[in-house]
Length: 454
Image (tube, rainbow, N blue to C red; front, side, top):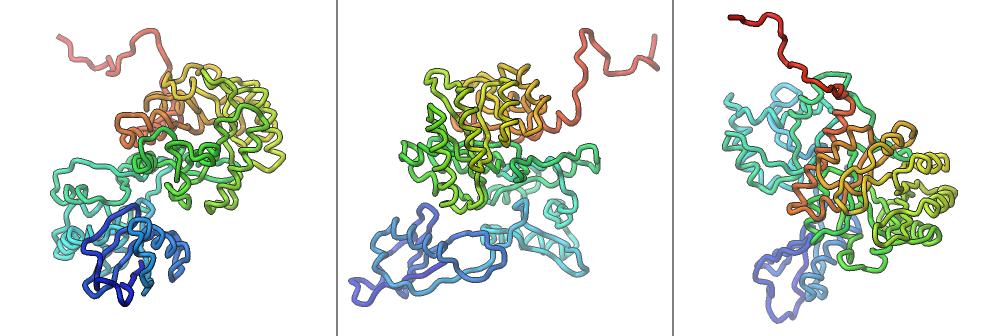
């Protein structure tokens, strides 16, 4: 946080008469002539002090909202730790040591959740613990799940008034640890390896995009709801400030999301190689120094947006030589997929149907062949329109999904993001569980022996 001081000789002791809320900034006037600016949030571990980037962000956002502040005096900066848990739920109730009670981990919402926290903890100390409290126990982290739900906002209907009040508060991202524990239930057969691409590991198997959203706020909330960790960005559109992409580089927290620059809009291998290089530099500028990922798209066809197999292979071979982790977007061609894998691509990304068509998986037989023969992750990309189609792709054995239009153009993109995240989990879990054989005749669920007869 920071504070400014009204300069001497100003026409009024305090020109600002109300609190202002802006994009990632609030400005609070004080009667003594101070103006308080807040607040950044950066992941720096336990490093003390303010960062230059944090102070710069505060001042830039404040002066953008109220330009007159640029001439005010920078009086003070300060900082504090915001303890957060992996699932973004606080730690409440009895701790791991005798006579230790926990009430921490509220991250940015401690001031909002303080009253209900005080009530729940005080009841616990008096021996009248609310059943709700067990969901916030530190012991939930003893039960890790290979199929964790995305850490996204979730409103549930429970009969306890306390839970209703918690959900009414704009709290941080929530998951339900009890659901995760129920999924695993101590069964080692449900263990799954994490998604690994070019040596980098991800817990989510859903990738999303940034295009076609109505505004940045909807995009941010939808991505958060999906639980995804990889977000693809069209380099050419960012570079040219295409409509809907101005400020896109600053719209997401790239310290938490892995950027996947893509070469959308490139019609030839030469164009795609040049744009891939720009994408790598863009990732570096946004703090991802070791990011060499590129989603390779070579698409000369403007009507159906089908990728050029020859240009894609040509560009992939060159980019692999230059040290890129290439994720090529292709038709569901098993032979091309194998050639790209042999060329050194980090994944193959067969389309389910044309981009943005919402037709679902129209070439499942070929995708199945690609999955059976690939030794790199297979990411089904394009055409998925519903969570059921997303789950179906994962049930086939795909390693991941990339979904943009189905989320961005849904009536409720945030809800659809959440649904797609859950579909990826359900489909992967079903793939490992193994489906029953398809039969031509019925098979009774109940045994026929021991029937009551007349």
